[in-house]
Length: 383
Ligand code: LLP
Image (tube, rainbow, N blue to C red; front, side):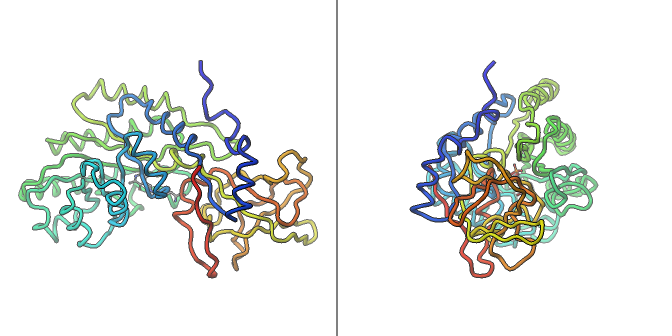
């Protein structure tokens, strides 16, 4: 059996010299490795029962990254009209049916624009059907259903259940069905996304079963979009998502309920591991037992540790071969105590100017960056 690519040594170890060179020339940057993007895409492609794959571009909207997925035949899941426009600018000839626009509490104008552009449009609330019925008359739509439960690596990223703002709850399906009929709407697909960073391989089958029930209630539905949320191993201490088990459980679903197209829309899984953030040591500090390694960017470039307590592997790329001799906090220059990229990390003795690498930052990194403190965040380089 072929070795799981996820167990190979990290790509950035092989490309250490190239990465050090890049920082020398371009300064603090995100670097994305196209070969790694393709390896993770191949794993998603190996889920055979899935008929169509969209890339959730909110995870990383870099044009080169989008081009790579386009070349591999992925469509795009977009959450704002800005994302839709970026796809159309980059790929003017794309079939509009390969774009799924899935807004949440967006203004009415964005729905109008999406319909005019002819992209697939998802409603995730009954409000637009009640309040703006004329907009949707005779149209084809997707509906985002709240399957009633959420899942994910942090409460901020659970997107199902009564306490989540996403999706149409099942108790409203009857009214939706009535309005759909009155307005002569075709519900082409049902959609659900329950959260991010999911390692339970049966999660997508569970979603499929619930969407299938709703589809049977509504009738005429062709597509069940099971969302994204495919988890990666965030650091060496975690297990992988069993992708084969995802595939075989969906195969069982498909055998039991033929006649539906299955779609998925991963973001993080496709891009996280392919990205690293490279930053440089600015100053060192010791306060009693607590040691700090300061670097020249922090939560302004990468907010996941501050926002979710996410633990990303961090190494001193300039001293990969030196032994870890101390426990340190790796902190940025932002005026917030939460501006920590890593807490209590074993690290070699560091020096000013060393290049520090934060791993698995290809997803929800640059896209969530800000100009806080008027410190420009890291730029992007694709190799
Ligand atoms: N589809 C929909 C409708 C979504 O809302 C999302 C993510 C995805 C697909 C892709 O999920 P993924 O495969 O990337 O887990 N900033 C957070 C994640 C927020 C996810 C928002 N929605 C993080 O850094 O963990």
